[in-house]
Length: 95
Image (cartoon, rainbow, N blue to C red; front, top):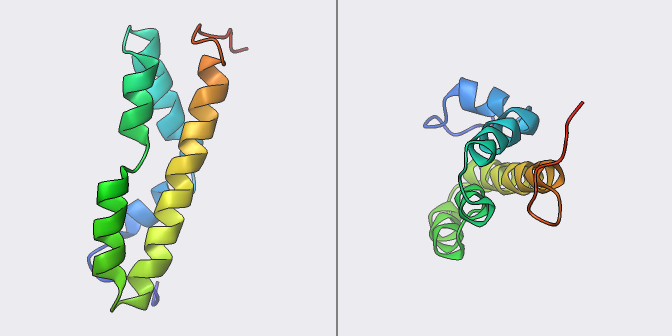
């Protein structure tokens, strides 16, 4: 991709097309006893990291595009994870 920064491997770009995979990975950890709240913190992009990324992206438009896509992806993963876990924190039966 011509618009992607050189430091972003192409497999990372393609992985961003499948947030269900990552949500399923985190859901598997939840089913193995990991705390849903801890996993949510792992999925989210912390504000400190986001601020650092924005500072670094000020001079690279392609990084801004990738950054926006990455943050949207993480939010999508979190939304899927929340659906799988359920609002009460108990696992839902997935068919």
